[in-house]
Image 1: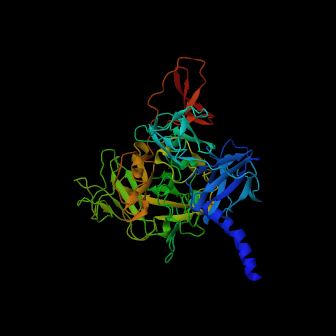
Image 2: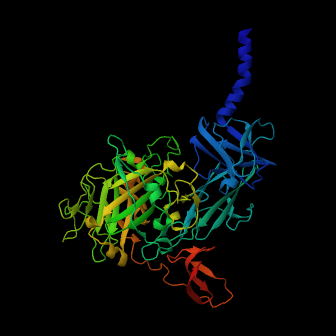
Image 3: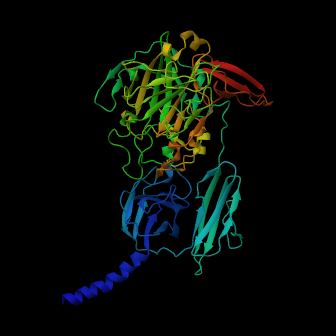
Length: 584
């Protein structure tokens, strides 16, 4: 009796199991979201690259997706608009593996809840021919892009490039397509059984912003914003040693010492090499903003580091302190421009860069004449200022190497300055570095982690060590740039310099899962942020418009266009007239 029962069950289950092994399909109910086309993004094993892949329309509000292999290792998924991105065009995450044959429903709205509605009993998913495009849809380009198409199973690919719906009378794909303008590529495939499938691929040409005189000024990158060059005042720094701890020394007053009046440079988050390759790496060294002040005795600096890159494919956001810069014996590098008549590359007489025994990595050709190197753990090692000798090189010997004695002069504080209300960065990790030259794709990341997850460093440099005076800073000014390092090479900088991204997506020689920026030679040519002195406008010329009816256009003194100006000094263009105006 038991044997006959087992055979009966196997007769029922084997065809089902066989079908599941060859086809693992799930469904989506689009009735609440009402997207014109639907896509899916999933992560784990297997996984899709963002923004995911377009799925098939079955009937009415029902869409379907068949996985290329059994998704037993998929950790989660979401449905989205097939071509648009943003919270309004996607469901919330569903943090479980999908169940074959089930239908899922999005609630609508921004990241509306995704629910499992159980087994789908309607029309089954059609057997379609799917087109794959390389590069993927959503890719942005600067000048020209070449797109290749393939299809499985092999059938003709009909296509249009003007956004119109393709038919079997449209052009047939036979060779890679070249686009030099924003293009909506639409394809049509027809199987031998007559089942049709249309897909859409979007390729967007970037509107890049050209750096002016060695400075990139966008809505997000801001060097000496509104002409600010730091404050001429004394900062109440207080440093306390904490032996036998990772952080070693704290900056106790840091979060009450600095305001927006002291801001001399704002960068963006996620502008380090690990945002492109090596997202699993800790700690995270990502400088975001520089604050400065000076008096008759000291130069005071504050640098905000932000935690906006994490192991999105594994452990996620750190729930401990392992992301902190002070969790490793790394280096912090500050490049100074102290004297307009001097410059050096930051290279030792043997051709190696400072602290590097085997090569040349971070080379300065931007007016740098002094480099400070210290440990990410304050008071560890022998931090020092390095100056050029008569040959334009430096050494570890006095007077070219200047140390600071045993008293602490810099320290760390965990958190985000109260005056920082936004942390601007690219919307997703793994973006193209050229996005940094635009105003597109940035979002406010301040809500991604708690404010206390970020890290702030504060310094007190005696002017006598730097070899400058208060009067010199007031009259001619000095410059500073923060170099973010991981390994031996630079992985980012504030102010921005594109040198740190020329190998961002290239594999590191010792570990292909991380970036070659850790070991390549980066030549810095972009300018420092200025402290003291006067900052000239980054606008060299405003094109005239002879129509006096043209509305007024407002620009900050560093060249940033402002749509809704508040109080401050602005360069204003009205028709063919350009003037400076103060709004109170």
